[in-house]
Image (cartoon, rainbow, N blue to C red; front, side):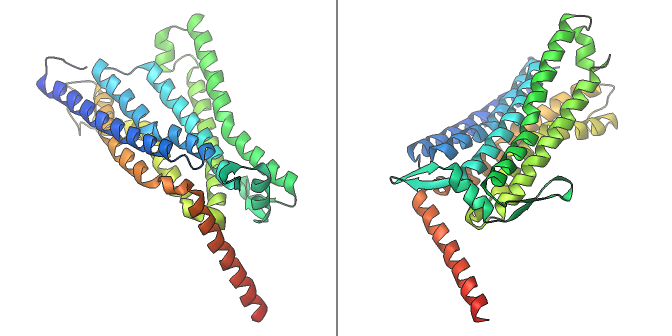
Length: 316
């Protein structure tokens, strides 16, 4: 689709490249800032992975613009990044739940995490199930169930990749795999269902963790929403653009095919949108979140609030 002799198309690709270079510089500055202020490495290392998401999406879309067609490995890269994000965010929350100070250093403690979970008594689970933290073993079991529900997406992605390779090497040709015929559509359905389940478990964990007083200052929902919304755009946006293209609302289908219009428009928008997500991440992932002196101050305020409430209850 991309015409190197077309001034409009060449300019668009060039401008998107400049935008992505600016976004890359912003991400690099933020990562360097975190590295120089490594207050809590166990959690901040996970943030590095999340910060790279807009760049993975943006540069992948730019490559598709440059080549002028959809590239199958790009879809696999985005799916892998989505799985990596789920892993990084769940382990990030886990590390923050188990945050403690030892020898003037912020470190992770599984015992501290269990104690904090047990203070909450119970948590909502799938199908309105209530999970009760009656002891440390139950608290650890809750974390394992969350991880199992979320990480199964990684296992499914690996299985789908292996099956796709086998099909490509045997009786299925590349056209069949690319267009989802001959039963390959079921692999896409399985991958989508697995992703939905993983997102559900991750959201349950985020919803539970944000209600914990010691975790309120982290603003977990905005953090999760920004990264995941950027990833979901790679799925939702092409579908919307396809509907518009089918109705000739973008450009007449007599001039170009719906697939080409969708690919070009979607990738162009994704490249430009990623700098917005880069700025949002710059604001919602501050280094101060991991400064243990601030964390101690926050924890102290929460303990004072709880103490005041207890005294008020006794007085009343």
